[in-house]
Image (cartoon, rainbow, N blue to C red; front, top):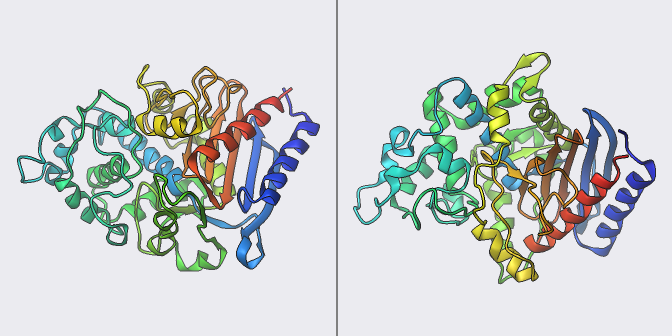
Length: 384
């Protein structure tokens, strides 16, 4: 198999037309097969308001795409015997249970599997128990979550968690390894082995000049308000950790990470993550359970409710015509992660195709799903 050059050109033209129409501001994209890049493109603006053009080495605040890096740390911990899927949160973070009996109900049942599959029963809120301005250090967040209630029985519903689940995953892994800093642990265990020199939790000072500011084009009455999203420009600083939303990276670094997943954990002949862990992580875990949060998004767009289609931290393509980030023409086994209104990667193991897309300008989430449904379909259709 190879790519149709004419279809790749259509993808570029479509992206440029979207930017010209004002749907978003700019993009860095990579499309590859068998690890070989067929299209790498840079389009539009890093910051439309100032006319600053996009550059290949732009540093993006990748929002919830961050969760993929936190997942990888959990995969290492699983393969190395530091944690098990059955490890309860309170076994590692006892203060999560809290001291108020009215806040303690069902918390003792939440385990790592629940967190990775978004079935913990914790609320689907972007607020992880503290205002984001106070969330820079992970132990502070873990302590605050002791006062947050479970809202439904663990393991019974999929409700995508913007913040809480991956805050807990990050702190569980940090404590399991005994690291003083989650940020430093991620650098040593994931970013440095992969050669991701421009990636960090937080925004290092040396990268600030290349950082793409977050600009939100979302409804004031939506799930996330513009100020909630744009406020992350001030929160994702040099000392921030935020395992759910706080990573910064380039398109080339994200591609290195995604290629590691495509190769089932192998990097330069070394096994960073066990293949069996990657295989289980990219296997459907949530059965026919629906995704409660994205049901709201789909309802607003007039679409059917979507299934959860979640593995261990990754989203799977699944089957059927309900709009999703991967489109209906990727294989059901295609997997990836996304960040609110702006970022996406996926790997299709049947087509052996990798797609990485980082954009400036955060779209309304329903429109974002429609955008990626369109572009992912075009990428799949480029394979001949």
